[in-house]
Amino acid sequence: MSTPELAEPSASARTDWFAAWGWIVLGTAILIGSITMDRLEHQHINPYTVPGLLPGLLGLAMIILGSVLALRSWRRGALREAAPAWTEHRRDERRRIVVVAALCAGYGVVLVGHGLPFWLASTIYVTGSILILEGISRDPSARRLTAKSVAQALVIGVAASLITQWVFQDLFLVRLP
Image (tube, one colour):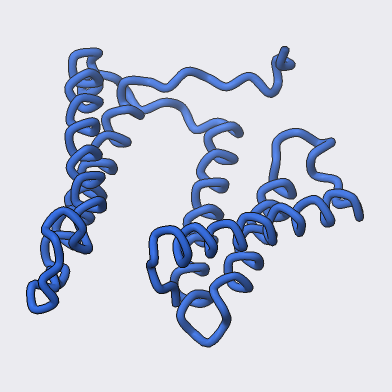
């Protein structure tokens, strides 16, 4: 059971409206990227295994589900609803979103593809993300950095990166950077 100060407010129709358009734009970008990928016809690749097929289908699903969310929020009055008041909760929520976006961008732009092995870059990303997000948690007990929490984050980071590398390289035969 959560305490009142940690209770999450329900998403408003207005919030869902903006989130829906975010998913639609992201899904469209993924779909366009997958369509423009090399199809490897010169290697006589089976059309069902071409690069970009799965990302294209996922992008299409994001567009469809984002559209459903947009329609639902529009019906709930998203365009008539006033902007919610700026609260401490909203400020913390925005800060967490910015931190997560920065972590993802740092992983994609700085860590991957610049000389570090994939497993090491992923270990740094996962471990760092866990520690940073725990550090800005709304729960005061989660913010305490202990040797145990660092060790747990490191174990999760190493395990996640090694499993991801094994699955993609050995099972899916995808060469990782």
